[in-house]
Picture 1: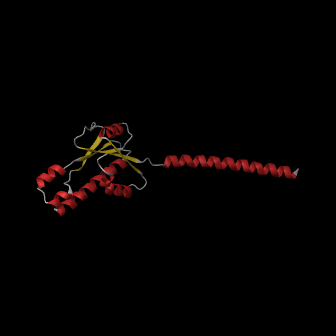
Picture 2: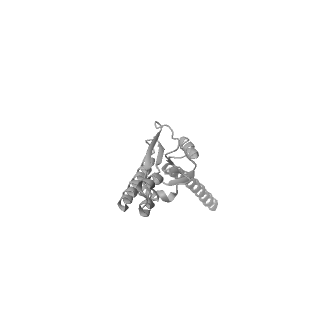
Picture 3: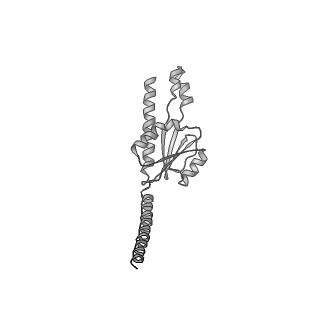
Length: 171
């Protein structure tokens, strides 16, 4: 009889332990979900390469180490639609494109620099400036809770300003 009581007690301890571990696992999983940071989703046109914004990505990673960055390439129409539908947080686009309402979105010029090869080849400055003077814009939703989007655009602006200053010293 003693053995039966010990076996029953051991089984009871195992069952209670199993239930406790299962419930603890669920609580921890919910806590991880609450603490998870949504990635910052950035879209850019197909012709713009990720290499052109590597410096901004590194600066963003340093300023926001817990915010993952997701980069996608799409056409302007797709980027705009996904931004308006909140599938993207920031888009980069050219100056010749249609923009949404400035009441809903921030719009900032992020480049307008001369291409570095124009200084190296010795071409006429006006000719190279006309051909290489492409303006890119960043668009992102006015949302005070998504300060990471503001931070990413600030990193882009700083990287462009640094590149522009470096190009001017080359001339």
